[in-house]
Length: 83
Image 1: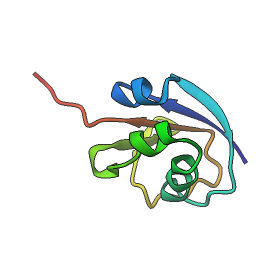
Image 2: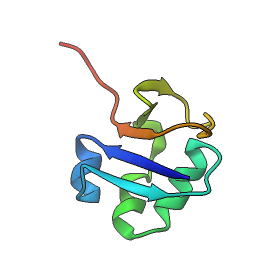
Image 3: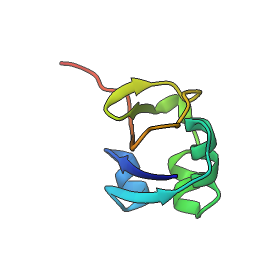
Image 4: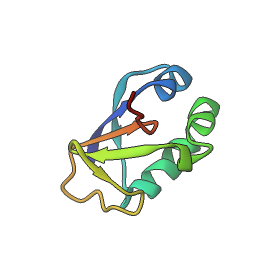
């Protein structure tokens, strides 16, 4: 499947891209992260600690165990704080 993957905040800085189109066989978000980690060192650094990340699937918050079937967009971002 083909997904649009978006990166926000320090993820964008570490990876060097705001978004990309990814061809994947991943079944879950965690599987996708595993695929991305092995691409290059910059991805490994960005996804080193997934506890410091949040994910949205088609603009809906989800967990890393969420299935990717039918999903078109995956966004990764740090937790947001208010102020």
